[in-house]
Length: 177
Length: 208
Image 1 (cartoon, each protein chain N blue to C red):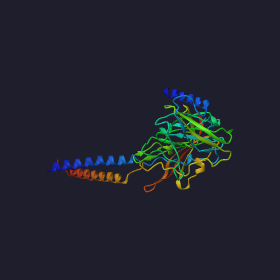
Image 2 (cartoon, rainbow over the protein chains, first blue to last red):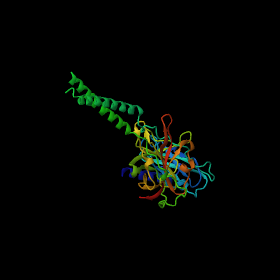
Image 3 (cartoon, rainbow over the protein chains, first blue to last red):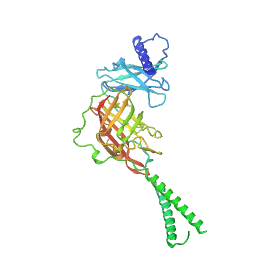
Image 4 (cartoon, rainbow over the protein chains, first blue to last red):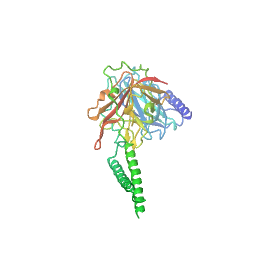
């Protein structure tokens, strides 16, 4: 709930920021930063997806993103894979015109505002990058049987068999006991 | 004297028997992860017999992946690419953690979303240890950050050798929401590890 509330507040702030626009937002508490929001890929074609990331929002920072400059509206940012990083993404509308657009993110906790540039071009600067090749997702730690352990087990059973045989023989001969 | 000798031999015999059985059972408890059978392969006819595709969802990053048929329920982390262009993998020491390709399609949106996780680490089995045992028709669920759940149905389970990996088939674009779940598999050599990957092909069949 609290997180939702924070997100909502962030969104309201972001909208307010967009509404007030540059050069200088008038409200307090806006640690206005230039840059700080990394947009990737920095150049996209309409209809493509862009990802943003920032380290400005601290450890478990959620943030409200605003890509309405390019017509993509608002989007949420959440803690990303790397520690201290907040990430999110949006789709650039197929109708977007070529140009440079400012993407804004407002940290949920601190209200800090970071921006980054998104460049929209009509021809793809490059294809979307797909991974290549296989992935290294195992080392064989689940594999067995371990030959050493198997040999030890077999050896122990051999000892047991020898001992058992010897005892049975003695009993059958009637000596002992 | 004889009695003492007999008792000693009996004791040694008993201990040897117990430890022998334990050693063998314990070592048999670790075995190679299951590999998909030929029946789970992609068929040439394509999507004819598959469950109908559900409409695409808006983009939203995934938080968890569940595969009830093989007991998977794991959180997810974002993955990038290594300098050589292959997919990064989640940290190996966290055995119950899966990852997804962050710069690609989010699970549920149109395109090919990619999920990867370890089959094992140095300690033993990891999150996707039993991935190769999945069968066509099994369900893969992805919890999304927007609160929804994307439900995928498995179309095929394949194993591909690393040296001849079909990049386009596995990672290539799709015109409907699709999912790939990848882990290590194939032949194993003590020197160079697993020789390939198990790849699960699935497509979106529902959401909630």
